[in-house]
Amino acid sequence: MPRPRADALRNRERIITAAREMFVESGAQVPLDEIARRAGVGNATVYRHFADRNELVREVVCSVMDRISAAAERFASEEPDAFQALRDFVHTAADERIGALCPMLSEGFDREDPDLLASRQRLERLVDALMRRARESGQLREGVAVGDLMVALSQLTRPLPGTACLNFDRFVHRHLQLFLDGLQAPARSELPGAPATLEDFRRHG
Image (cartoon, rainbow, N blue to C red):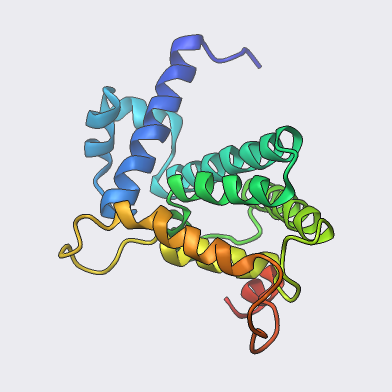
């Protein structure tokens, strides 16, 4: 098959970027013509790249997970301090607002979609490696799993109901820092219950 033209690839990326911004701001049901307008393309261009809304949502979420995975790889290879690498990853992931995007996948999506599955498995593997490295260095408290970290990221980057808290974003990194301080060893308390694993969420989701 012929390779897509450079301008077609640029338009696709502009659509994905605009869709991500608007999904975070307004949810997955934002009109596609508004996404086209923000991307600076025509409606026909959106439908030429994405057959329907679900395909666009899937592509946006895969794109976000792939960017976060690339950041995890970068911090793992460039940051010698294991816990600082984990800390940098968490703040970078928060900037992607995954808490606002991931719930969209529960709305009629195939959880075993090959693209979503590959992106998710890559991200889980890389986050697990970051946490294992921090644990082996003696900096990460025991009894914490990947699921615990992803729960906090999801909750702290999800917009609050309503519009009263217009300055919510400026508190996200502050509260993530408080959470990360609680992950460091030595622990000041014993955690109740069992660590949250991602398999738990898939089984009960």
